[in-house]
Image 1 (spheres, rainbow, N blue to C red):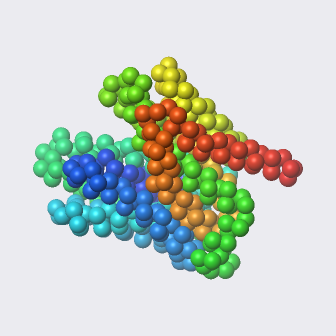
Image 2: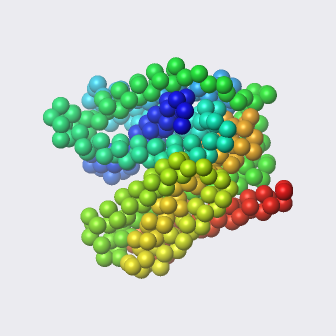
Length: 378
């Protein structure tokens, strides 16, 4: 790790703040429909602003878009940090946080390549995703932890927002002083030229892969707890041995991959096969296989995003911003794929795990396709 990567790692840490809107929502609104609007507004921002964000990064520079994302996030968390907003004002703030986080993802993933040493991009991106996972867990924990401190407890659900605001402002300052030589396209891109990248099969397959991966991950976060309860675990055990164990293993897997030299294609293949094995265990409905399945699943899910993203960007690094926009748009899979699993019974029926299993079957085939291409090019 070099000093130039530190502000980017801080930006990745703060991407996790948006993930805290799900756990926070029940404290803000008792009505489940109103509560569901908070994470929905984050996801919808990815669908709407990823491609425009990629185009903007390609035209004005990834650093400027990163700064814009941090500025929007600082404003978004600043409102509830200093005011007690009505729900009608809070939702636009959450949407603004979603837009800002979208821009951080769109610019942060490719700019990591510009600040990384030769051969370190995949490793640094894996580490960055691990740090983002730490940020997600820490942000969700902070929402409840601050209630033990009198000053923040008096603010109720808003207690964590002054801390979010201070960290966002610090990251904004740190990135503003960062000097980076960016890889740029020869011609300014357009929406047409960005979408034209999908005519190249390798890019289309990668975007579909990200869509299915994020959808499968949200399925795990949503349905693991009820699945373990259906297998006889108590609510407390199901929460700890389900989502907590899964995301803990996922974060550890990313941090480990970020601390060693990895071969992206091989690591992508291993990750896909591990995830496939874990999901197959969960699909059996066996209580004895459930915990190994959760653990293997977390380790398998851990490095799909950084490996697939870095492999795709390295194919045409001068189009990194546009590719990042397309792949970040695919994060909207987190809003769609879980609906299919829910239709099959969600966590109440082991058969429903066929949905994320099918997603990982696609990723496994995609990883083997990359192996065949590598072999034929030698």
